[in-house]
Image 1 (cartoon, rainbow, N blue to C red):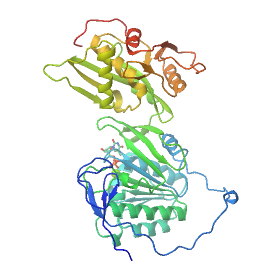
Image 2: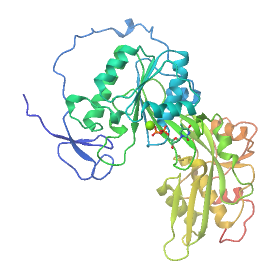
Image 3: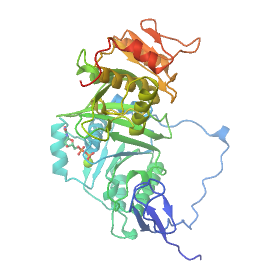
Image 4: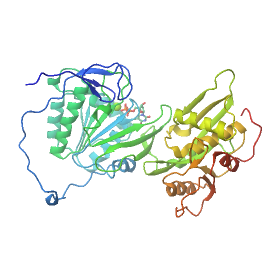
Length: 456
Ligand code: TYD
Ligand code: MG
């Protein structure tokens, strides 16, 4: 028998190391390493189920379980695959329990028993929430329990169509010691739930809180075990929530579903572009519409910028919804290549609606918004902007062009500032292209009139 070795595991990202580290090389977080039992290799051989030739494997699998929310189905790639385990991660309070309860109710009503295991809330609290959601709750069985074996026994007995475990950090296995939420506990509990799901062909939702302290293991430590990983995201003070797929063994990743948190739970947002643009001020400087693509879905967002003279010393840059380093790069290129001296300007960039924009395709929109605010010049009306900015001030083309332009045209935008497109690219007929090769040229074509530089 080899000597059992110690393992240290990062509670944030799950990286492992044979010795304790102050800073995790995987996720750069400090003080997140904890000692964890090495994963026990199972010594007993299971009866082997037999080798099968791929061509002889039959495909008479059960159909997917469609969820009552089409935004949710979209992210899953068309419903829940029987026997799959789906991890739903997100910050505490973002709405994970609410969303899953909203899924559970109609499935219980229409499809069969649903078992909702809650280690966080009492049945009365869940009842209150269900009342708020207007859900009677027939065939929806609540189980306030945290011991995994007991949970699995109940799951066997309940003959469920769906099991929800809320949250994995509250569940524990007695043999592994008392501390629920440790890396070893959450991983082993997830693996056992996974085995149960595969054996019984029942899909399981697992809730995992994104944790800030280093003691409780976060959902990243489970991503490699489960079939599907979804994250529910949103800015704290915004009511919009994005459900994002980051791993999916049965569908495409990077799909997003958009919801709005209301008094009566999560409401699907079918036309997110309209919502994100609905509160836009007309004729404002420093505001540009950019057609981004989230997953496979185009989305129009408003990028806002404010440039104002620095009162003293160091100019400051502040980014909300845009990568900070990207903003520094764009500001530097604007100064150096497009004649917008930003060296003594504070710059604030914000994406309305609490959306995060990570695409280089939004560079031109960000630059245009900053220049518009700096010069106090409005952006041409009915205009959207697309293009990646290079360090020389040159503009590069973007992916998914047709989709983005179609979405912009659908919402009534008439023109698009765009680097030259390849011959043969399909452009929707109802939008006019303003081809631009450099940032300086884009500012000339995109801004209405050039007012005095200075404060807005
Ligand atoms: P919850 O689902 O408990 O979050 P999580 O499970 O991710 O921790 O959501 C909690 C928040 O949602 C809470 O601040 C109240 C709010 N909420 C609404 O705004 N509307 C509703 O209908 C419900 C049930 C909750
Ligand atoms: Mg919850």
